Structure formats: structure tokens, C-alpha cells
Length: 264
Image (cartoon, rainbow, N blue to C red):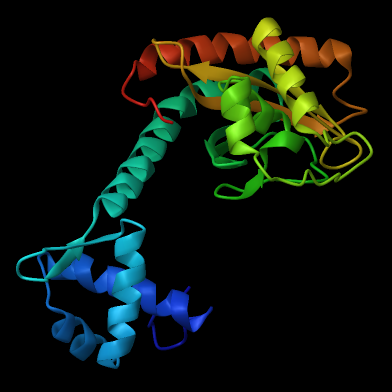
């Protein structure tokens, strides 16, 4: 967001702000920089610039030439950029299929991808029905407590789920929320067998969601598509209709995506 002068606002923790400024500087530089150049251009003490760069190097966001000691953007920055481009490409390709399901049902349709233990909404087709809760594009929600998220998690086997949720404390958002790894693993098996996921008041009471995974041609879950609304409106019969439309759209989208969107 910009302030009244048109300059970007710099809110947040100072350490985070400094790290982001370093990444922006290296991106704009288009090449490598010396530590002294980073410190001078950002008006930072040399020791501070050193500590920030060391942290970014440890996490792969910045790389340092062992001979010249100059720094450039690292592989992690490239990976994040590629992930963003894939998400943008996927949302553009999915739009006509999402709009078709929305027009058929009159409900809001979402497209999501997994980021760690969260589902991230990357596209939405607005329906005409009122929503008590509305996940905006770009918002994260806990995957274990949402239909969209559980459809995404169904692409992981028991071992992968155990690794992802190692040491995690399952938060019970409602009385219906999954609160253990064993229950999540069992739910994922059931989702893989039937081909769809649901959230019936697991994140917010009174909200129901059904979702289907979107597969690459190699069978990997790369995204998920959902229909959500009030539990009173989305009864079993309407959910069955929604799932039929979602499966058809997901199949068509999977054919269009091919294998170029595979993600871990």
C-alpha cells in the first residue's frame, strides 16, 4: 500500500523490513553487489548488512560468490518467482471452468493451492448468493480445517502428512474440526477413495464446503476447486450437484494444465 506521497509504506518488524529491502536492492541491481555497496545504498551499518545477508544466505534467498564475496539473488528467490508465475497461469487457465460452475450453481467458486499447512485462494468466481464468510484471493486458511485444504492434502500419503504436521498442535476452530494427525490421515484416505473433500462447519459453524482435487496428467494434486455456502443452502442434494459440476470442471482443467504445474 502507498502513503500520500506515493511511496510504499514500510510497516512491520525492522529486521524483516531490512531483509526485504536487501532483496529489492539485489533484484533491481540485476547483478552482484559487494557488502559495502549493499550497506551504502541502503544506508545501513556494515555490521547490520552483514547479519541480514548472512540470514538470507542461510535460507537460500541470497548467494555469495566464494571468491569475490559478492552477493546476488539466490535460488529460493527464483523458486518463489516461478511458483507465483505458476499460480497466475493456473488461475488464468481455470477461470472459464470456474465461471461455468458458478453460472450453473449460482454459488462462489474458489481455486486454491497448498503452501505448507495452509490452503491459499488464488482465484475466485463470485456467486450471487450471500456468504457469511468469504475467503479473499491471496488469503490463507488452515488446510486441515477446510474442504479446499483437505482436497489439497489428499495428495500426500501418511508419511508425508506426518512430516508436514510433525510437532503441530491442531487448533479446534469448532467442535467439528479435525484435531489429530491420525484423524487427518484417515480423512485423507477417504478423500482419495471417493475423490472429493468437504468441510461441514469445521472452520466456521454453519458454513459447508465441498471441493475436488485437480490433478496433473501424472496424477499429482496441483490445486483444488471448491463450492461453499451456508449449510442450510448447501444440503446433500445441492452438494451432489455441486460435486458433479466440480468433477467435470476439474477434469477439463487437468487436461489443460498437463504436467507443467507439478509442485511439491
